[in-house]
Image 1: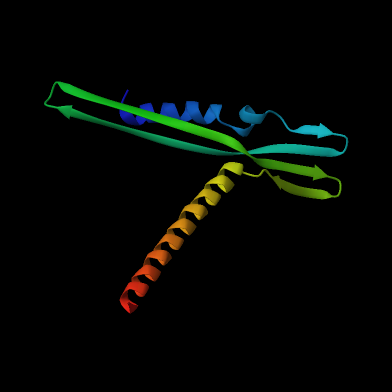
Image 2: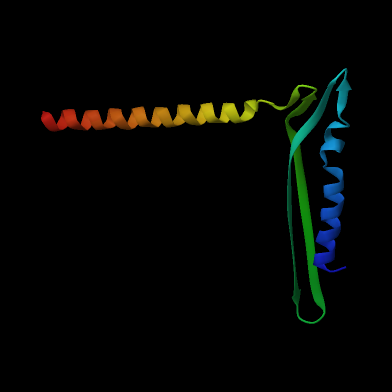
Length: 121
């Protein structure tokens, strides 16, 4: 099996296992309301091969998949709407980054003030 066939086989197996249905199951119907779960699915693949001389050759490949909830589609007789799930990790990262940048700006500003005071003395 060459590297292209290996990656194709791997991609087919991973994509079959990481569908929204496999992650969450079937849509849920309650009364006149239907909820269809949605997910953010990401794939990554890589591979390579090589040879040394005429008798030695090798190759390999790998891949991965990540799936996480993103929301649900709600369908009622009045219409449809998307309900987004909040991503608390992203908010936490943004808050931490903002704090670090704010602290750096304050520190730089204090250093410049000290330098201006020294120059005036």
